[in-house]
Length: 100
Image (cartoon, rainbow, N blue to C red; front, side):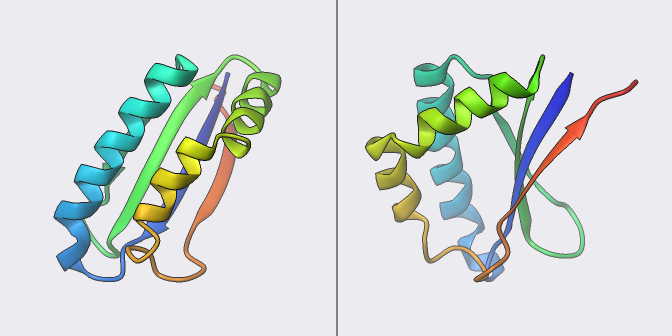
């Protein structure tokens, strides 16, 4: 199994309510359209980091998901709504192989 994560740091705490509302809408859209089980959370300490994650049985599932959203104009329209939330250069993707 593999876990995909995407993290981004909010510019400041005033964006928290907007970011949570936006992420909730984005998650609903992605989970419905792509039959995904995408989840998100906000770090409790240190930086104001929001993280999205989902698990996949294999890397080809992650690749297919990524190819789908890369061409999805509705997805990009929603992403653009939150462009001002993030510290520039803070978005980071990772794939972790789950071993235990």
